Length: 110
Image (cartoon, rainbow, N blue to C red):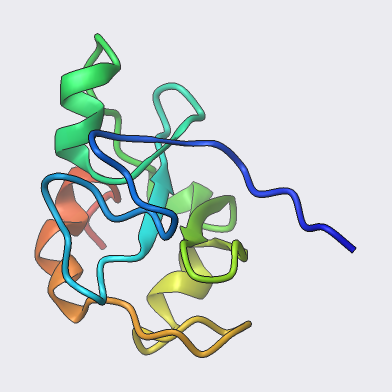
């Protein structure tokens, strides 16, 4: 069975959604932008390619599927991602804990 992954936009993407801006082994998530409903590897890729400003996900919508594991293609809600302990609940791949420093660009402060 082939799992269809959502398309991810970005600058110089690899197969696990790493981009020109964030390339460590742990930089394997993509975020569906609230403003356009498109997955991007990071805010800088969105800024370079989208042609519009980022809108943050309001806390009331954190149940929406908006985070993609680049290792296995699992989509998760923002709540699931925030509660994941920086590990994919499906495949166990480790996510970059440093991403929390950028949450304000994607998610309403809680």
